[in-house]
Image (cartoon, rainbow, N blue to C red; front, side, top):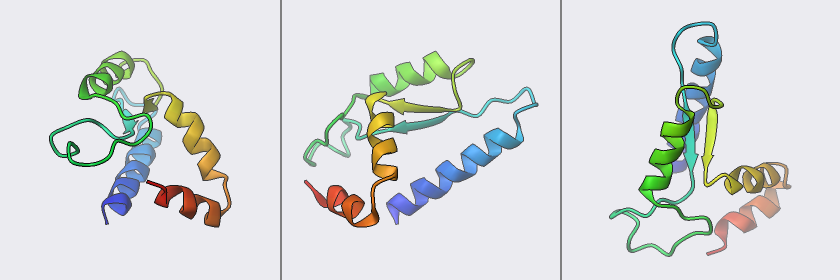
Length: 98
């Protein structure tokens, strides 16, 4: 449910950004990996785990002139691009590895 909600909100925000491209309104979609917070402290850290300050810095840097979508850390963009094109069984196996 959590992942589906995130995916739905991401798709909606990207569609909204496209719809408002000629308006003086800017939508920034931030796709962080795991972020170190009080909520995640008891969970094993995933690769590319970042701090809240990293996310805040990416938002501040890209809010006015950056791309619509920002990955934090930036290496996640490459990783997720590869996973998106992986066959479904490979993706399932990779997502279960912990």
